[in-house]
Image 1 (cartoon, rainbow, N blue to C red):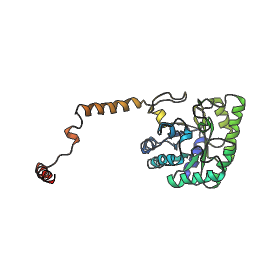
Image 2 (image 1 turned 45 degrees about the vertical axis):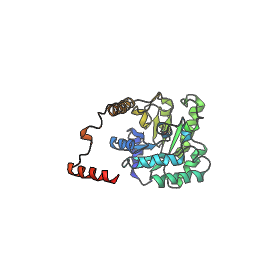
Image 3 (image 1 turned 60 degrees about the vertical axis):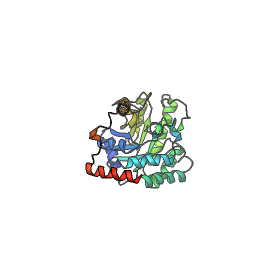
Image 4 (image 1 turned 90 degrees about the horizontal axis):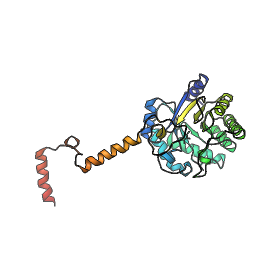
Length: 283
Ligand code: KIV
């Protein structure tokens, strides 16, 4: 990997400096992430839920995520840009995983792709890495593996699940993944596994001792309606002010307060008079 930003992530882990990752799905969220100085921007398949309104991340297609990713690309200059590979676009074979990863790299210009799971998925990761495309892994809660309608729950609370997460993480590291997400894993389990890995771990609901943290843009800014997961900290509550803004606009329009003179373009009276005269004739 020649891009120094990948080495920088490894250096941050060694220095025990937390890595910051945030999701983005369009040019607005991408520019906000860029201007905030985060290290990594993820075009997550969570866009299925927070942008496209699907119930499950399983419903987003490659073509749909490509549109979101290309929009995000236009706003991200400095951080690494990682794109999720959607459900069904990489699991079946190494060839499929490589072909889909190439589509994302070529159509978006992303720096890396992310895939969910260990076991055979680590083999897919290896094939993609060998094809020259960096891969981020994802262990713990795997939203793409949830049947639609099944509630999300933490993973790794029992010995067997915790060991399986550790095994997946080791497989993904051995496959050449440059980093991996730990989602909804007890802090003590994520910490213990992180200490056994040389590549950075980026937690979401995995406690404070993973090598970095990620949150979904819409969650951390309070841009969505409804409940959020236990691990979400809201740094702003923007949904209410958005509704207020649209309501104020609607009220102004209905009361003819908007547009006011300062929002309209003036025209030279002589030009207007000539125009009106000709307009009448044109009818
Ligand atoms: O899709 C997503 O937003 C993710 C994060 C939760 C890491 O995978």
